[in-house]
Structures are given as structure tokens and as C-alpha cells.
Image (cartoon, rainbow, N blue to C red; front, side, top):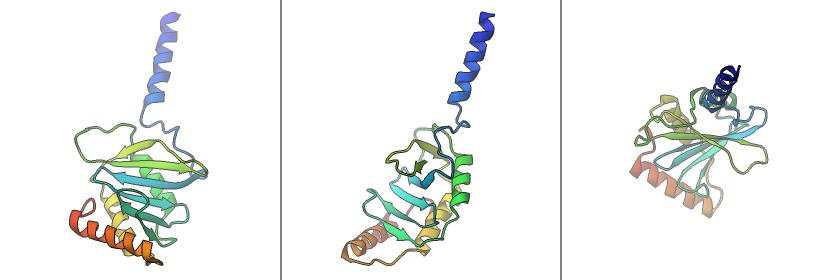
Length: 157
């Protein structure tokens, strides 16, 4: 009887640790935004209303994206379907994805393939649908990020 209990415990533990078990990812109803961050420093935030922002480095410097540009449900489901808790190769580039619940200031990070074409398309769509800078600080952010886009080429270009 004891071996069966040990076997059952091992199955529960393996299931709990499996990347397919995304128990720390909030349900889509509770998710305020999805944040994707590349190992090269580029990031993009997709909000529930289809708006967002993108940038390089700190989240303070950013370019805002128009509302309704992204299909939040599609981004949420695609990232959730393709994410894993650990990277397969720690030396390769990666894209980290986090799901932020309303009112939460942190979220667990998962990983998706760096070369996923649909991730590239998120960045290209964001670049095409920016909200113009409305003040001097935002203009500085736009200038800085656009220069980085040209120099360091954002991911997947």
C-alpha cells in the first residue's frame, strides 16, 4: 500500500511542476495585461482593451499603442499555449511572458520561443500603430526608442 501512495505523490508533484500546468497564470477575466520581454531588452505590453506600449530597457521609456490594435484574447491564448516555465537552452535568446492580474504589481515569468514569427508581428504592428507624443517627455521617449529601433534592430528583424 505504501508504494502506491508514493507513486501517487510522485505523479501529483510531476503534474504540479509540468509547464503545461499554468496555475499561476490568471484567468483571462482577471488578467489586466500581458507583458512580453526579449532577452535583448525590447518589451511590449498588450492591454485588455487592445492598446499597449512598447520600448527598450526600462518601462519608463515607452511608446503608447492605440486602443483596439491588438486582439487581447488571441495574444493571451497564444502566449499561454506556447509558454513554458523554463527555457530549454539558457544560452539562446528568449522571450519572457508575464500575465498581470488587476491590482497586482508582479507576475510570474514564462518563456516562449524567441524566433516565433507571431511575436515579431506584435512588435511590427505596435510600431505601425503608435500614438503621437503629446508632450516633450514623450517626444524624448519616442526619439530614443526609434533610434534604438534603427540601431539595434528590434527582435526578429
